[in-house]
Length: 427
Image 1 (cartoon, one colour):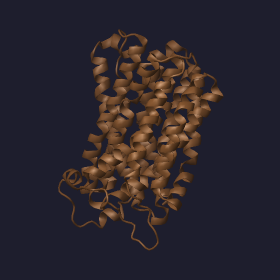
Image 2 (cartoon, one colour):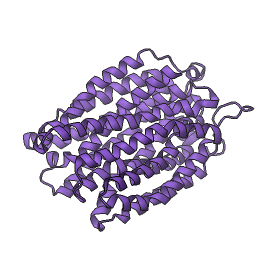
Image 3 (cartoon, helix red, strand yellow):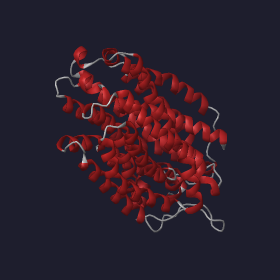
Image 4 (cartoon, one colour):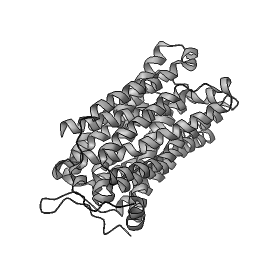
C-alpha cells in the first residue's frame, strides 16, 4: 500500500501540476500576451475563459477513460492520461503569442487546454480507484487520501517554479519567455510519473469482475443518473472554493490591491502546504466517523467562512490574507480528503470508474469552470471588499450541503461487506 499510494500521489501531483500551472499563468500573464486588444480586466476574463475550457473537457475525459477503466482496467488509464496531459502542457509553452501569429494563438491555447482537461478527467478516476480498491476497508479513506494530496503538491510545485522565476527575472523577461519554463518542465515530470507507474499491478477488485458492461456510460445514466447529479452538486462548492483562493485571488490581489506577485504566491503556497499536510488526518477522521459527516461539516464551514475570507483578502496584508485563504482551504479539505473513498463506494464495481469520474468532474464544471470568471466580474462591480464573491461562494456551499444531505453513508463497518450503497439514491 505505501508503494501504491506513493505512485498514485506522484501521478496526481504531476497531472495537477500541469493543470495548475495554466491557472497561474492565466491569472498573471496570458491576458496581455494572447488577448492584447482587450482591456486589462477583459484580458483576464478571456484568459480565465480558456482556463474554464479545461473543466468542460474533464467530464468528457471521464467518459472516455472511464470506459477504458471499466472495460480494460484501471492501470492503462493512468499511463494514457498522463501522456496526454503532459504532452498538451509542454505544447502550451511552445504556442507563440498573439503578436506573432494573431488569432491562431488563442485558438491553439483553447485546443491544448481542452486536451489538458481531457487527460485530467481520466487521471483522477484511475489513480483513486487503483488505490481505493487495493486498500483495506477500515483504512480506505486514509490510503485513498494520498492521491488527494497530489493536487496540493502539484500546486506548490507549479507555483514554486513561477515564484522562483518571478524572483529572478524582470517583469519583461517573465512575460517574454519566463512563463513558458513551467510548461516545458511538464515533459520531464511526465516521464518521471510514467516510470513510477510502470510497476503498478491491476486492481484486484477489477480482476474479480466477470460481467463487464458493454457501454458503462449507458449503465451509469440509466441506473445511477440521480447519484451522478447529486455527487456533482455536492462537489461543486469544493471546486469553487479551491479555485477562488488559488487562481482568482492571485489576479485580484495583484491587479486590484497592488500586492506583489511574489507575496501573493507565497501566501497561497503556504496555505496549500498546510492543507496538503492535514489531508491524511482529515481522512483518518473519515474512517472513524464516516464520509458524509466530514463532507457536511466542510460545507457548513465553507458557507460560514466565505465572508470573513474576502474581508481578510481585501486588507492586502500578507498575514491576514494567508489566514483567510487557509481557513477556506481547511474547510475544503474537510470535504475532499474523504471523497476519494466516498465516491467509489457509492458505485458498483463494474461501472465505478465511469460513475465516480463523471460525478467528480461534473462537479468541477459546476464549481470550477466559471468561478474565476464570476468572481472577477463580481469583484469588478463591487467596492474594495468583494462581498459578492463571498455571497456566491456561500451559496455554492449551501447547494453542496443539500446534495450531501441526500447521499447515504458508505463507511464500512466490521459486520458489513464494504461494497457501495446505491439503492437509496439511484434511479
